[in-house]
Amino acid sequence: MTFVRCVALAAILTLAVSSFAALSPTYQEWGSGPVQWIMTAAEQRQWKQLATDGEAQHFIDLFWARRDPTPGTPQNEFLTDFQNRVERADRYFPDKDSTGTVIGRGAMSDRGRVLLVLGVPPNVRREDDTPETKDVWVWEKDEANAKFGLPRVEVDFVRDSKGVFRLVTANSDFANAVPAAMKAMLVSPDLKNVPEWAKQTPSGAHALVLMTDVSAASPDALLNGRNVVTFAKSGRIGFAFEYCGPAETLNMTTSILGTAGEKPLQILMPPVAVKAHASTSKSSCGMVRAAIPLAGLPLERATYTFVVKLDDGAQSYNLTQDFRIE
Image (tube, rainbow, N blue to C red; front, side, top):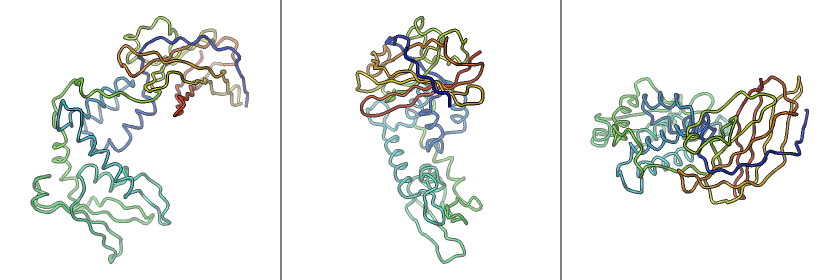
C-alpha cells in the first residue's frame, strides 16, 4: 500500500451552515430497515427518488406525522408502538440456521414483518407433529373484523431446510389483511408539509457533502446541497458536515483512499480539533466545513473515497463520499 501522511491541512472554516449530500449511510439504513414494511407503495417510490439527507429527513418527519394518532402533541404513540414492535421482533424472531446461529435480524424476518404490519397476534401456536415445524398466528372473529374487516385471519410460517421460518403465502390471510392494517396506520394521509411539532432533529455527525468552494456558500444555499463528484488535481476539495450533539469540540481526521497504479493508496491528514458552530436552522446542531489542497498529492485520474472520522468523546463517526479526479 502507498501511504502518504500530509503534514498540512487547510484551515478549518467553522461557519454556521446547513448542508446535505447524497443519502448518508444512516438514512440509507433507515429506508432499507424495518420501516419499509409499513411504507405504502407511493412512499416506497418517493423514498427511492430522494437524493439528499435533507430530503430524507423531511420524508421521515412527514412519514411519522401522517401516522401520529394525536397530532400536535409531544408524543407520537404510533412511533413508540412501532419501536416497541421492532424491539420485540428482534428479541423473539431472529432468523436462525439449523445450528441455532443467528443469521438475520428479527425485525427483517418474515415473522418480524407480520408483527410490524398486523400487530401482536392474540393466538399463537406451534405445530411440531407435522412433517414441517409450523408457527400459526390467528386473529379471531371480533378482533379480526375490527382490525382487518375479515371474519378470521390466519398467518402460517413454516421452518425451511435451513431452519428459518418462512411466511406461507399460499392460502395465507396476510395479503388480505394488509390493506386494512396499512390504512388504519395513516391518520393524516393528506398531510403534505411537516408541521413544526413533527420535526425531528437527527443526532450525531452526518450529511457529509463535498464541494469546490466552501467559503462562498451560505446556510440557505447549502440546505439540501448536491454533492460535487469531480475535482481538478490542482484544485481544492471542500467538505462540510452537520453535527447534532452536546460536544463543543470534535476530534477529526480526514483521509483519501484509492489506488496509485495498481497499489492501494491512503493519504492521511493530521488530526485536528474542530468546533461545530450553531446552525441557523437547528438550535441543537452545528456545521463544520473545511478545504484541503489537492496539488502535490499523488492522485491520478481515478475515483477515490474521501473519509472523515470524528469523535465527540462519547461516540465515533465515519463519514464517506466518493469523488473523482479529472
